Amino acid sequence: MRTIKGVVTSNKMDKTRVVSVHTYKNHPTYKKRFRITKKFYVHDENNSAVMWDIVVIQETRPLSKLKRWELVNI
Image (cartoon, rainbow, N blue to C red; front, side, top):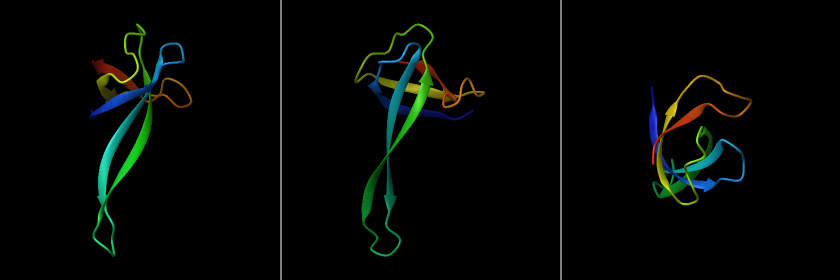
């Protein structure tokens, strides 16, 4: 299973956190690196993660319409 490290950017939902993950990509023509941010909806059973925590998330079975990840470590 895949694991990713990211930052919690929203904790307003119950048992769900939004985690932003930054990666870098090269432009195909100009070869300049630029940053891409992707948001993941993460299941947090105990509501333990708060804003700006650095967390590790793991891929899991679909838990709802958007949630496909679960919290592993804070």
